Image (cartoon, rainbow, N blue to C red; front, side, top):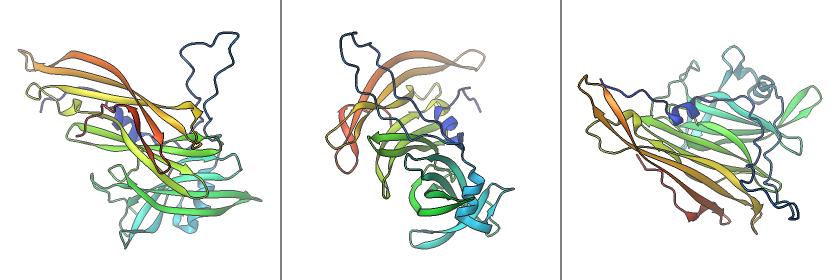
Amino acid sequence: MKTIAYSLLLAASLAACNRVEKAVEPPKSAVAAPPTSPMPAAAPQPPTAARINETELMRAIFGDAYKPADKKATATLVIEGSEMLHAMTPVASTQLADGRVVLIVNGAPAADDGSEIASHVSSGILNVYLLRREGDGWKVLQRHENLAELGSEGFIGSVKWVTLGPGKPGFIVSNGGVWQGYSISHAAIFELGSEVRGLGSFKEASSNEGGCGPTSGQCWDVAGEIRFAPEPQQSGYNDIIVSFTDKRFTVTEDKNADFVIHPGTTTKTSARYHFDGKAYVLASGANPVPDI
């Protein structure tokens, strides 16, 4: 079968599974303020990352069900009213300003022996645990299990720690999948308050590169870069600004039966998402990411 060699942005993001995410600096202004002008308000910083032994955290959460050699535990989760065994794997961790440690754990469908049995269409289960150091050990403060079903292949996606506004830590899960050369990723937003709550999602990227050929017509590769506006709104939450790069191209077949890519247009656009009290919604601009 003829294929085009390319690197899928989404495949890379889904493969990423960092044990500890580093804090992300806010973007710098493209235009420097005049010397006599006051400095612009700084964008809120993400929660401070810490060197955390996730093995200790997993043992505190799951006890003997955690197997260090496999770097996973088995646990029973209630999915749509039914108890189902899942393989629980740490995805990302960080320490909050108040000293609590957050561990995000992926749940994938598992067999009785604990082995993963996720199919391509199986979502991963998002689980969040909050712990605090007590002496030489860890105390589990909160267990938030089965918060959302995200991603595919039994994996929720990659996690980025963010600050949604002053004193409002949170995280974004980039999740999606690849189907017959077509890929898509959504950015799911969560707040780490007294509870963990979802604040909506939007399309972050998509591409048909892997399935595009001479008879496909137009091909595309659209990706967004997420940042937070520096000034908090009246709600106390900062707007999210997504800068999109929209690439369009076509493919033909040469005399050697090889596929040839012909660059088309590259368009830069942006969208601004505002927190309306319940979720982040599109406030201005447009999201150009095609559905698949």
